[in-house]
Length: 266
Image 1 (cartoon, helix red, strand yellow):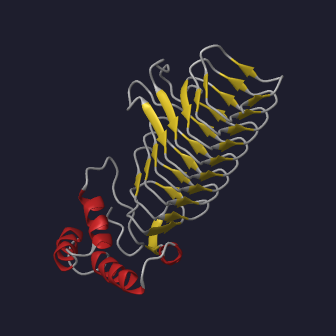
Image 2 (cartoon, rainbow, N blue to C red):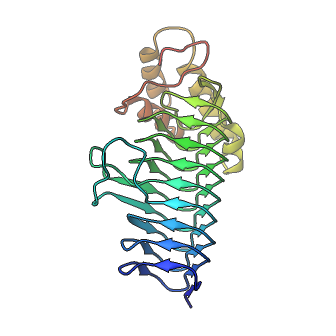
Image 3 (spheres, rainbow, N blue to C red):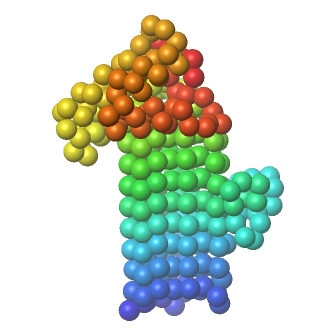
């Protein structure tokens, strides 16, 4: 059964699913869609063309779908789509896309967004991510699945973060982050692989061993980076994890690549 507190304001046109809970003093705009099982604690405000997926829980003072922090005006057709089973803690902000961008901001399933974290306009956020307190994405950032972003970390516009990467607290990320990478520092540098995350997610000793060898070859000091990239692609062609890094590096990018301290030619 859907329960809407007497002090909540749900505007005409909003689509509310089954077993939704809307707490005190929430404000739900006319173009909002809340799927089944969504739970909004007190003082949640949702505006614009915003969709919240099944069983997502939203804590007090969260702002979803309000105009992006962008100098241009928000087009009414731009959207924010949030997946299912997310936990969105206090004072998180997520903005829709912009007319000059993709027009869409997406957040995947199963994410945990701690207090005051921010997802800006036109971002794409994958599944099962963790954003610690005050973790911040600028516009057009692409964060893949299982990424952890540390507290007070900030990611520059148009940066790509590959799957299973971890970004340390208070890190400023200017360039793309390879899958499985471990990033820290201000400005950020590549500190190795996210070995703890790989072990927690069930990667075998053999998989991790091969991935470490591919990493060492790719970021060695001998030869050029492009030569080493070709070597990794040839030697590890049958290794799925290593080839994810190769394909990530080879993909089109608006930014350079975050590199180790000894090889900062991103």
